[in-house]
Length: 301
Image 1 (cartoon, rainbow, N blue to C red):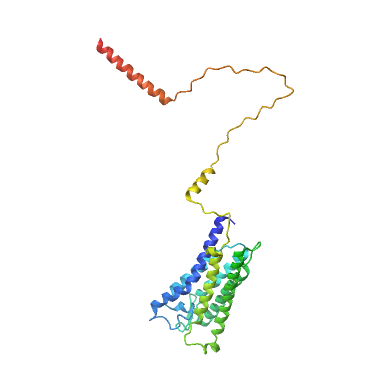
Image 2: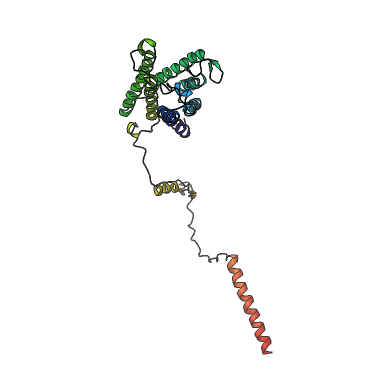
């Protein structure tokens, strides 16, 4: 993997982490602008906000998350496969909306029967969170060599986040049943709380994996922060100088007869060629002097 590909992958992870962490707060914030027109249960879950004033924000963030999952390459085919599954399942959350009393018959862009759309919605959302938990627990914790101290800390973070996602997903399923609902306060936002835990855990794990938090990054002694002046000096040193040809040393041949040494005769120094610009300069001076003398002699005559 080239440095450009690694930088792109880290950048995608940071965006995914930021999008997931911002999803629940953004939906709640935008939903507040439509309190008079929103359904009474719009804040019960992110899925319920599909029918509220926050639907544009909810659809936009989830769609952007799906696009980044589709474009995420990863380290190997396992990362690539899981990212495609996550992209399809998270896209299914908005393609197949959940059931809501405001749309009792048909819903979604395909105008499916509401109960059928609700079932597909639960399947895609559940698959999405299960795949995310699997990714954090088994892929993020992999290492090809002896893990460093910081890597062990990161693995603990990935495991905690993965377990939180599984616990929150199971809790949301259990507390959504009619048997448990009767013991909960009216309009208690079970789904929104559990989804906040899941998306925040997922986003935080991705930020750690993307090296966005320096506290959990490995210390690399080879990496040194250099100033602009030092960088320029190093770049100048990289310039390849033209090597000067060196004559090989003369090795005396023992079989060669002794020859009289040739004494270098003094030679006359040959003057170097005068640049044409200099010659032209003096020619002009000579011409001017000649013209001046000619005029002076004419006046004398």
